[in-house]
Image (cartoon, rainbow, N blue to C red; front, side, top):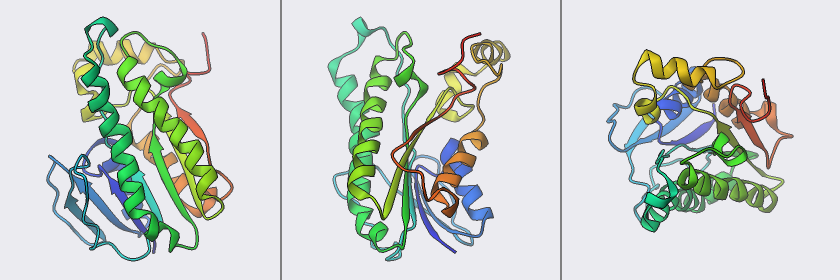
Length: 231
């Protein structure tokens, strides 16, 4: 049994990762902010606001085998209508939040024989889309952080990043709240469907596992072919 910390583990992709890790008989510590969850056998849910300056992780075991940082936001606006503060707020959530958590949990990750960190980007970093300047900027920073951390923490701690396209989660609900919107978004992808949380969770759990011990510093696209195929 291994110990995993899932930041943002109460809904969407984070919830799917939490459930899959639990099904594989691991011990999972999963944070929530607004989606309150009750702890159960081998899953301990706890409240966490990632924007706080300091977090109390004293309840965690001394060994953490894997860390997953899932909090995110999707702010889509024309560039001319974006306030610079929008960039700062998004960066604080997506990048600074991840940095703070990693720094505070790092001693526990180093106590593991091998450990893995999984972060999240977006297809919009590699493939430019209208109105995505905020999210593409912060997630671009996450991709840079992934590669730099992978170099610095090797060989004991692996760091990888998953870059999905639109996925059927509460975070994307505004864009998928009708059959017409779902169909339109599906048609934009070569595989003609949108992603499901399980699609992303499967890869995340693989990257956390001992099956991926020769993979680090990678940005892996799970995007229905959008980033690499033109039809």
